[in-house]
Amino acid sequence: MTDMGPTQAEAKTQKVGVTAADYDNAHAGLHASPLMRELWAQAMGDQYPAEVEPFSACSWWLLGNAVAALRLRPDGRLVDLGCGRGGPGLWLTRALSARLVGIDFSPVAVDLAAIRAARFVAPGRAEFRLGTFDGTGLPDGYADGVLSMDALQFAKDRVAALREVRRILAPAGRAVVTVRQRPAGADDWPTMAASAGLDVEQSLVYPDYDEYWRRLYALWTEHEQRLRPELGDAATDNLMREVALAGTVDNPPTVLMVVLRHSG
Image (cartoon, rainbow, N blue to C red; front, side, top):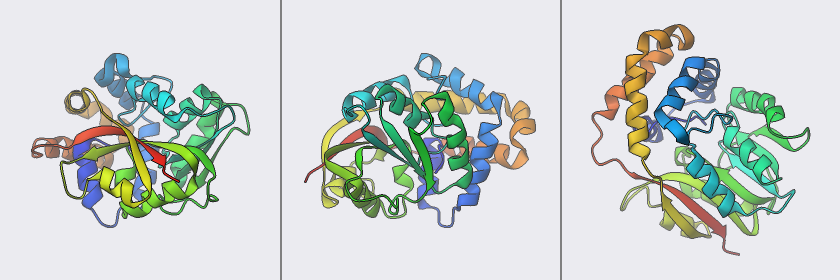
């Protein structure tokens, strides 16, 4: 699972046939590009958590609220669904003195996350595995907390993914997810959560989300010719298509940080 902007994310959730190989290529290209990290930092300003190096909307605001919401005890188990390169999950694991299992269906993401783990936690406190949103391979009640940042909306079956979250959560455990919410319809996360046996404990609107992505799109456009040698033409063309698509989306959904609790 990869991190991407709001317009590309909406397109991806409706697109059939996106493969792990597509995400492998995206993770490898982004990880190898110092310029992309520089542009993300410029777009986010003082909300950019530099050590995390997010290629997502992960901000200091999100990390701080996630710490407060998860409330893990020392050595509690945190599961990061759609972990990507692992930055947010690893940062939270260190902040909470937890133990981490990251799940992603991209082998490149899993490998990169495992390499990055040594920057954040001691050996043995984080592992990364191949899996899917609705097939983590973890035991029932395994997790004291679950994280899914800018990822869960990419599940082919969102209710099945939420049921998997409930299955792996210990009783009274919490999940922190960032999602895109529309007033009604397919993005009705509270209704989907309830049908999966999860309670919505808290729902916070992500501040300045659209402004952040607009700044990033402007920077991509300004630095297109510098990005091409680092990312390659295909990946850079994808970024430019995303920028163009951004101008065609009316009434984008609200972005939320939602705290879900095992209702058992």
